[in-house]
Image 1 (cartoon, rainbow, N blue to C red):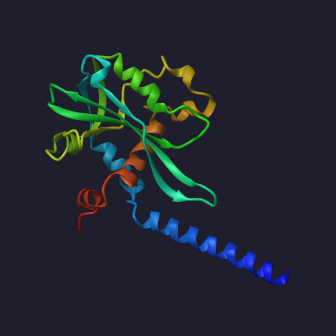
Image 2 (spheres, rainbow, N blue to C red):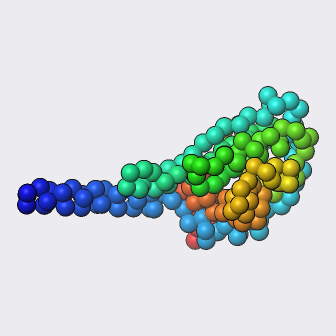
Image 3 (tube, helix red, strand yellow):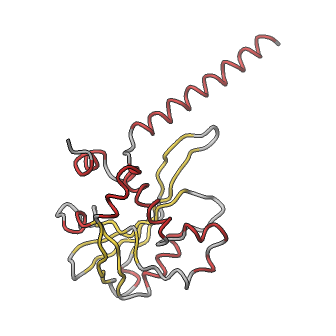
Length: 198
């Protein structure tokens, strides 16, 4: 009985060490997005984007990124994407709906894509560097859109209670989405080049 008690404690200790190492790896590989989120927002501007006619030219893809390890599961953020080509800018743009994953809620990306598909234009807030850089705009590396004039009132019934506070396009949502984008989605190399220059 005593040996099995020691074995149990050793097993729990071993699992705790593995979790700590796993979370340390995730912590070391992420950028300090919170520190530069306001700078990214300040360097953004509103532009009018043109949505191609026909829903087939707008593609929606649900996604997620693992950001940590818990005792019996993983911690993730949703990274849904809505990709389209703007014939005026001659660039691909991607609306990212980035939010912590909650199993009991509908994916906001499914709601946001409905708004986009029924419109001819959207007024989007885009970082000026990403809008003007030749590095962005291809199908493989589209210009990211984290905020636009989403018709929140039309889709208000899809949100319950506290969810409405973090509904797409609201200020609290946008700031958090920028933090998550910079922290987990932007490559470490680009982040250092743009924000941590010596």
